[in-house]
Length: 533
Picture 1 (cartoon, one colour):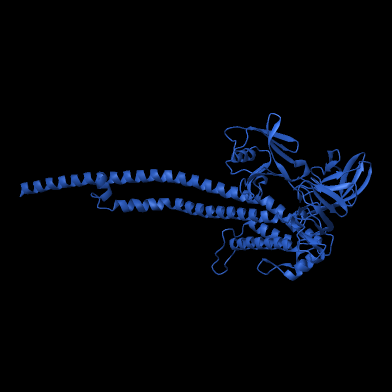
Picture 2: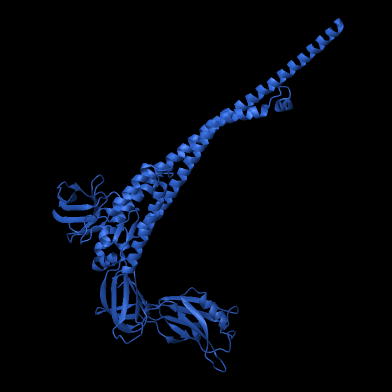
């Protein structure tokens, strides 16, 4: 019956082709939904790509959205005697270093202890058994020297494996009889880390070491102040700077703004912005001739992002302390195609003239006008503004400058912050004096970096459920809904196809029966005709 159905042997119809075409016709709504799902999936992938690009851009923006990250300082040491090529010190800095000049004299370097044993004929030379006593500073370590390690090489390994802060090695002094000596060096410099090593049997010393170099502290003078340090790497004398002592001598340490490093950060910011701008332009394009569009053409979230970024770059920065209040003034200007370009001459001039002012155009900055007040920081809820600060009834209060609408700050001890729901929410400060009275203003300004950082945080942080997260969730939900619709239609199409095949099969059976009846009647009529003839 199936063969009869497939071939249409009784009906002489191409039933397989008829069924295929009927199913194709019935499948058109599914095809439309699949095409729609494919388009939504493309848009979802594009938004996920956009999210990744924004996170990359945000990482770059975070290198310049605070003054400490934006500014870079370089340190240089110059010998007092310009003809002296002896390297006295090298300087390395962090973002915490401030510009300044310091006189430095290195009197002596920090040293570690060094001791040497008597000579042995070889590294396998026998060492008297007993107790190896190692003293580093005030800590003594004892090791048993027995038949398993009573050679010079065994003694070396015992010392190196003791964990006592020593390094043992061999020295060949060229002697004809006993040229091999064991040299023991302390791994830590400074007088507090002096070393002694000996082997004793009971109270009798059977092997001693001669000190060839005593441990000592580094001695230096900075701006006339005598200083001793246990290490030649001095990290806590000049804030944000590390002085690496190399030799005795004197000279000048100069910490200055590293303009080249700052320009590199700005250039990276511009490059990242232009890459993002080109991507957004590609996704938003419209061809007026063919009316073809990018995948995200007309999307409000993308349009709003483009406009917000452009406004951030072109707007004046409020609260700056110098003559520059916009990026265009320092040579960073928007081009007709929406990208930005740097005029290196203008940027270099601005950085040389007032690098602090340039930093304010990019970074956040907080200052105070009263010595009793220290700016600590802010949160994502804090608004850039100038805030009047007073204490009333022993409680610190903040108001937007000039508005005279004070709100109690929250905190304890000497640390406080603006209360939730106020413009100063999250503004953190330290107040040394809680006596009633006025304490000037706390000034908080946001440059382009912090402004863009907030925009990108709102877009990319899933926990905030911002516009980009909403778009991705919406596309995901839409695709899932379409998939469910397709499954439902596919299920109904299966039922339709099964029913259709059964109907055609029944048709073939019915036609077969009718054909048999026809043949029977034809035969009977033929018989009757023969009878009458």
